[in-house]
Amino acid sequence: MKARLFPSAGILLSSVFFILFLSSCTVHAVDSHREQEMITVTGKLRLVGNEPFTRLVITTDGGKDYLIEGDLEKELRALQYQTVTVTGEKLPPSGEFEYRIEVREYSPPDNTE
Image (tube, rainbow, N blue to C red; front, side, top):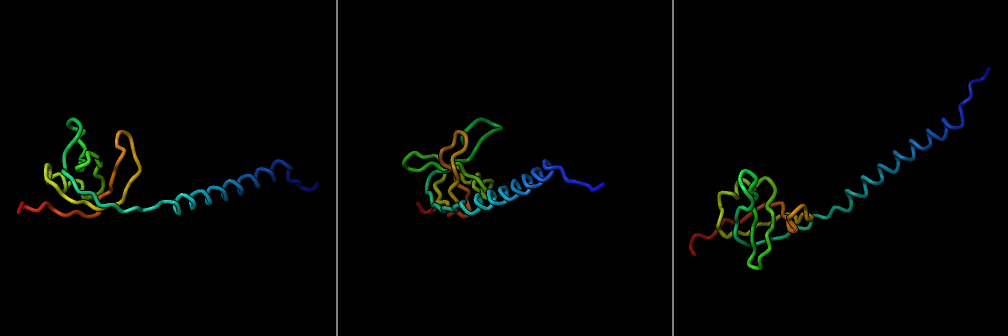
């Protein structure tokens, strides 16, 4: 007797390969569309929220609060209530924060004012 593949087994294998192909295309598309828009924001650093869930934001003269994210966030907490300039990647809105920035560098406040 000859061993025969059932027609459904061929369809199953074809479906698996097709799904794997589409998955790799989707991942590539997401990576290629991620734009790293760098922005610079000047404002006053302050904490918002209640302990122990405080978040650091930089508030511009126009009243926009940018949520500070990234490795420098803890370092910037030491500069609360001071005006600084931060540069970093603009992040999409998340939760209650319409504006977010992943800080890559900052200029400390000028103490000669």
